[in-house]
Length: 137
Image (cartoon, rainbow, N blue to C red; front, side, top):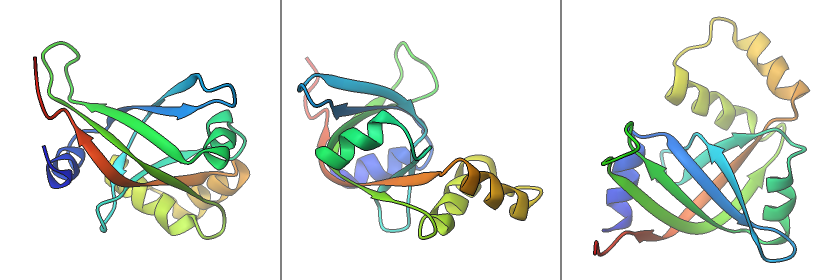
């Protein structure tokens, strides 16, 4: 499997599990809704006060499993990469991009922007460095 295969899969599949590292080295595992941006990077959103952000700031190496619609028998991909956190106000255009990819046009963009500000919503952008599975056993 190549990075391009994962990017193509993410264009249509948005059920993900993000893995980051806690301070003690154990994994923190979070359900996420990833999309792929125009440059082939993964973007997800988060409220600005979550533990996953604290953990990513300390160690930006992340892993993610993205699966299809069905749990059993569904195709899935793994990716590993380095995350960056994009905060407000720089995150707003990416938050709108994410919204359009996931849910389409919002009925009131001004209201949506205010909600994103109140939630201190950020974007986690992941540069894909490794992918899998490369073998099935």
